[in-house]
Amino acid sequence: MNIQEKYAVQNIKIPVTLWINGEAVRLEIDPKWTMLYVLREVLDLTGTKCGCKTGDCGACKIIADGTAVNACTLLARKAHEQQMKIETIESLADGESLHPIQEAFVECGAVQCGYCTPGMIIAAKALLDRNPDPDENEIRAALANNICRCTGYVKIVEAIQLSAKRLKEGGKNGK
Ligand code: FES
Ligand code: FES
Image (cartoon, rainbow, N blue to C red; front, side, top):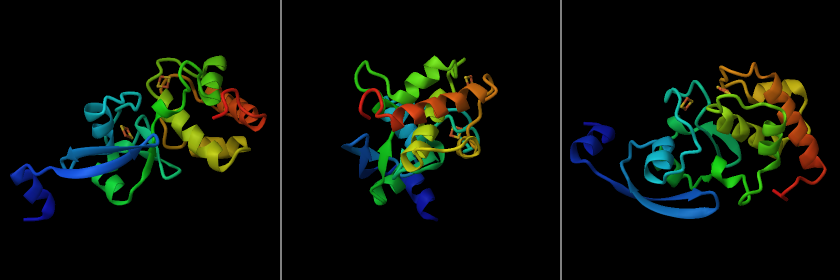
């Protein structure tokens, strides 16, 4: 019996500490739970969307230690063991004040049904955090694993270009 089977048979839960949006969250989790499950179903952080659950659509993107990753393929146990610093879409706005990337998505018309939008914005934030001045190819590469079935991507790329410009100028809400 491997360790996953042992946990399943015994319905074992383990204590973990997850670092989410700057806070330490202490929980008991099933070792098989993904970060997507913990965020949405345990912590009610439903801004992170569930699309495919197989790592193919990008709707569930979060930032883990500075890198955009799919929450549906990241075990919460691993985030605990590696003390990953997790950022979700809920961390971006400052009260009623949207983050410049969020503002730019609205202004550029980069949102239609909106289902892909949190994942797109998180992918954009991870990109701009490490590269404040990306060219269009770099933006498109950063979105390569994020699927949008509505917009055709042009407005999304424009929104990221606009938010990069604004962030370089100092941002609107200091984030
Ligand atoms: S729900 Fe995670 S990549 Fe689609
Ligand atoms: S806006 Fe609908 S999937 Fe992207």
